[in-house]
Image (tube, rainbow, N blue to C red):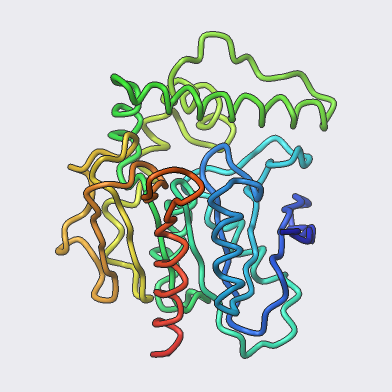
Length: 287
């Protein structure tokens, strides 16, 4: 499947790459990828295919800095203004087309921050957030323990590649990455100072969505797995913390953005690729 790239220039000069799935007549669905990911991530491509099959127009919005675009900053859990600005500049021919969004992992944090910050003024008709790290500090601590460190190493390698690629593109020195062996250390040394936070603790406090979910007024589906190596089950919100139009689906299995079953890869059932289009179709029907 071929995705069509459309760069979008934001008011501050940043260039954000959007990748459009096959042309479809239905509602527009924005996809926000996870940390270290991009439009080529398998979960993005799988969801684009599934959404196209349901006649939705899928658009992946890559995070600021992905792909080596100019500029010092990149995306983080609280950077919701970038996708909001991109949406305002997308070449959508039919203004009556409803807009929905799916956020994956850190993309889920960005999406929920967007929904909570804008409330009834949010341009999104509905949303789905998958494997969201609601409490960033707890998640950073959890991923630095036991077998979860394997996943942490994978994330850090992706972040290092992102920074090196951007440095080459900008003709700038690569940030000092020596000694960064945990996600919290990366956020302390790189994420926080680049984006105006005092330190990692300040970033986690200001960008976590755990205390903001009641402010989400749009129909919203949260999908979480209790065996997620990144997100402790104890941080998954209770029903009392949610807005009246938010539904939480806790799955006993699924890992982090997994939710795959089947005897082997060739016969795998990618449950998200069925559940997400079904939710958006149902939300569209009641609008």
